[in-house]
Length: 213
Image: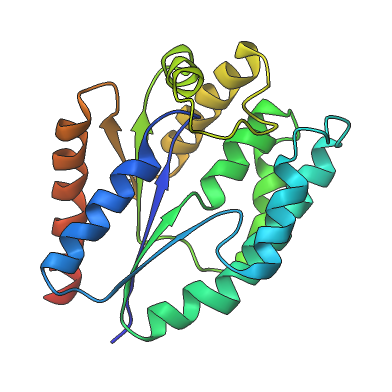
């Protein structure tokens, strides 16, 4: 039995990482085999690429360089960690995947959604998430959360102007329009407890549907 692949997406400060770990706790309580991971990162090679991409000192990084680095990290993470976990029948919860590149580099950086999609399809082949949950929060709200969180390390993307983050948000809307039923949207401006419940409803239904298929 192969597993199920669920990715978590959203603008900066959407709260998806915190919620993802809450969902992992519930999966554990119910006895599901699962794995929590992130992009870029999740394995040593990809974590090193992450350091290069997000280093606040690398302001001169070219947009195409950024897109290619994300795709490279994604490929290694996929083949080394995600696919083996799916082969073991696990529920894989991944903090960001392909859709982040489409929104951030394809739209916000102006590289072209189709162009960035082509790079990433080469990297991941046909391995798209079974379900993607988008945490819908306005850019200004997400950024305010970030600046209030004193424990969160500020990375290169956090330092971008508000207009960049607005383009990211618009990019996600275009990605959602193109993705059919794969992406499910959750209002992430609600209280965190309600967001957790909404996300759990999606994840549990996906897992139950998969287990009973």
